[in-house]
Image 1 (cartoon, rainbow, N blue to C red):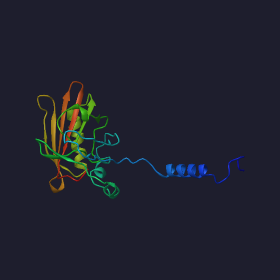
Image 2 (cartoon, rainbow, N blue to C red):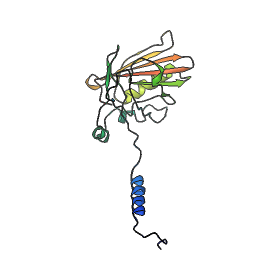
Image 3 (cartoon, one colour):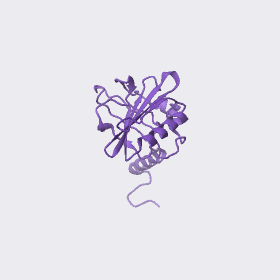
Image 4 (cartoon, one colour):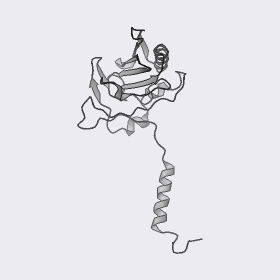
Length: 192
């Protein structure tokens, strides 16, 4: 039954219906990428790093995120930028499914060194994090080149290699009550 003074096909109702239907038909995407902004220097970067769903099982899904899916590859307009570092040339971002230790949070503002990703975890055991990360990367078909440590500061370094010369370095450094997880994702690796 029509409301008085409000015809059935009023422009307001049509616009409202279109907005509601459009909102119902879309869902937020869990995939994001770092996009280089024109005029930014390699030291200043805007990043968005989705974190894997926390789980203590390293075989739970990092493989899919380390391979570009067709939907992600076709939706990108601009690719992530790269930076030259002492370690070598790196991507300024990590792929969406890169394995991140459960409970860690992004810590991009915690240091001046250019990295593909930096995370921190309160009270994390570097040896446990190194073992978990090694297993997760191996599940994602990366081979361990070396796992070094513990060093004097209690830290570890994990060097992994993948196809086509893709190199990944993960540094675990305890500082105060935090353990920092620094990642260099080599330029020969697939575009994040």
